[in-house]
Image (cartoon, rainbow, N blue to C red; front, side, top):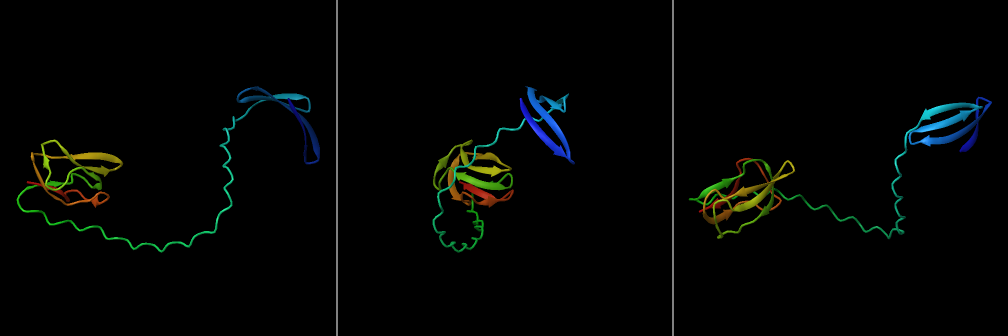
Length: 148
């Protein structure tokens, strides 16, 4: 039990606080007992450790100019054009030019709306051209790969 004395507008109140159970507390004010509901405080996060004294700040590097997005390559004549089924960003290209692939092999991984989508070969063939690079953004129907 904890006891307190409060002064409110020059009036003195003697209070005693005793925990009954989580969320319920008995509070005695000037001899009268009140059962009150209390919020259970969240456990405080661990205090961050003090950082070591900072060294002199290095001069900020000049901002690198933004590179333009690579322009789509002209498709190689004669071959199956594998196009993006939806807008997204190329995560990985899993094949290389000249590589033989079979129907159903994953050619590349495309991220769209936080989902990874495997883009697969629709037929057996040889990779004639890779028109994208990892990190490149593509729109729906943009050329990704040409199979011959």
